[in-house]
Image 1 (spheres, rainbow, N blue to C red):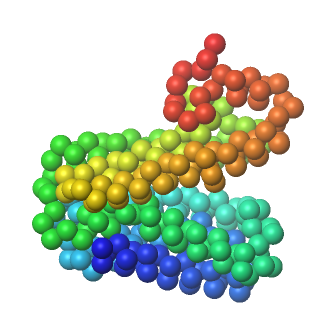
Image 2: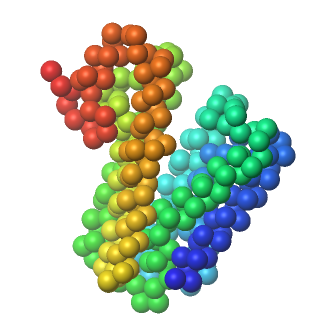
Length: 253
């Protein structure tokens, strides 16, 4: 419980610092960077705080770090190109509403990290076994899917403003989110051998990010945005009809 409370405190402190910069400079450049950096700081901070150095604990922390560095670099590079995030157009001049976003982001990070926070707090973590191997495989698959789909989308956007239909996007309208979900369920698997009773509640971490992407700030927002931009395009209607919304599947006939 101490590590979980510490993760909430650290996440709140990191996001409060970034909020101060973003609000003072009225900039969007640090927003996505703060999300990824919060995970990285938590992984390193909890590892050092708890003195957890078993193979399973180290691999779980490294998995978070690798994912955070990859996503952070991608999102930071993107915001440097576009300069502005229109999600915050009605927030920058309203400090309390802007602060609410950062507070919710801090809480989200801490919740998603619940399995890792719990695992790193264990004095006698389990050795690498079937769950860790399976979790590592799922994490690696998710990281590959997320990285590849982001790369394909970036390459496509350099040549066209139309919706992306190449590569993994031919089989899923949101393959990057599918990869994101795999990453966190894979990381959760590292902690499974040490979960008993109420400890299984840390599954709220991967469940939370899954539900968030499926029903709140992920797929619903992008689907509405795409419909507003391309809804009158017959090619988009056909793409939407034929293509799985999340899990990569062969296009429907």
